[in-house]
Image 1 (cartoon, each protein chain N blue to C red):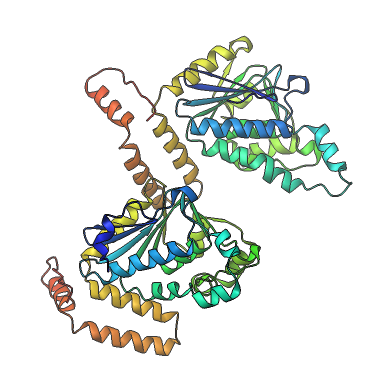
Image 2 (image 1 turned 90 degrees about the vertical axis):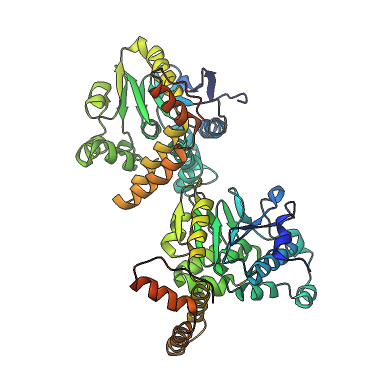
Length: 267
Length: 266
């Protein structure tokens, strides 16, 4: 990985940890964060040795979404009334969300603290979420007179159902980690000091699984959003044909028959 | 003159031809330029397809590029260096007319970039299998040019007017799924399977009576050329024509006798 400033990266045992690194502004997202995150995710997709990605934040917050000071500046420059919000989303954010959702390896969001606005959207674009007990999720868009973006209107309805999604987005009240767990929005809640260990344990397990099959499973999940029963089963059949040719499938089968634990390589 | 079979040996050429059990498989192979289709490549491509078309052992044709790029556009430098008089005298676009006269079915396996002339090749094909990663675009107008290989005419006959105008005038790239919804491609499959799927279609076509395939292709293409009544009349004559083939007799008899038909191509 190249030297980054707005994010930090580290690789250990097949797990790439990407840490949003603007703790003084609660990891608000500016242009640098988007560019660096895009680069890191692109490299992660290409690097076979990386078999799981963890997204987390430095300091007390996970991510508080768009940097509002930057936003205010963008709306003034070069002249008031020329700012293109749609272009900001299309160019900066949407490719990141697509990259997370189509990344053919598991992505874990480790919520070390508050997630707000598109920070929640980023967490929702991951496959699994693990949160500290003190973490909160805040759909702050409404308070700013804005619409939830970065696919949050889709992912929230998927994961919460309509009524809860509407409550979260309309009222803009912080959702506690415990409540998020009950609602099925996060997979695990751990004590505050326990996040690094719990994340490492979860990510380590994911990184030791048949990465190719997990990636294809993700693809099937994405496909299911626009498919009929027949289309989805045909799609599964083709993906299974691909998975059936992987070394990890052979290893899994051999290990099962030999009654020994499998050793997957991700290929 | 080289025969189609000689192309099997020419593996390092921009166009690779390979005969696979009755399938004339043709691959655009210029990985160093993501399969840019210059005039020489187009000429070689059409010649190869024509040779396989003329080869009795070949039942159908398969056209593909690479997973990253079916074809990433024209050779812009070549076009920039070509004057109006050059292009008129050379009439390089005539290759497209020859492509239209290929009688055997052409199955196209497309993945990655399909830009400009590559899209026109796709439009000249009969059955198009696209990988999910396919991105189709016509950038010609954005450069002050026009698709010259049938792009405007075939596209207008393949999809609705509003979609044609959107594609041609804005140069917007569309995904495989959008192309499927527009009727521009026949099937969309995961990228690991687009070639295999196309090959399987070819294998199926190889089992079918070759004359019926060719006549059916001719009849469908006529629909784009003529009025409904002339087209229906043409279809009826072709329908009668097939009564004179051994394969039609055999196909009907085999159905009645509940056995697999054996087609001889006569």
